[in-house]
Length: 107
Image 1 (cartoon, rainbow, N blue to C red):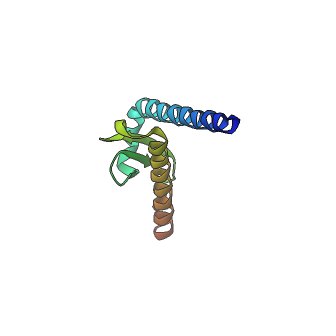
Image 2: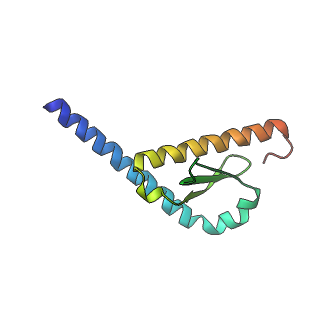
Image 3: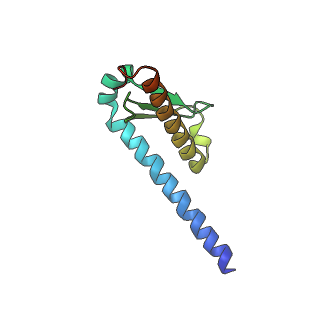
């Protein structure tokens, strides 16, 4: 019985952390909107395969935007957080690819 309770507590803690992460990203997106308008034209945008989540990074890899698309409301928050992190990893990989291909353009 105790192990089941421990797992439930652990799963509950993970779900709460995922919820807090999503809330922070929404708040970040709202606060960064004015700066994003200036930086996005030079930024790199990567979205999840279904378009539920997207990130925007500068040419130097700084996260400047997080967006949520259609369908994100129906997703498990843990899965949505993983999508955001995957998109961010992909954006950083694109930054590195561009840096290697054209070092003078990376900023």
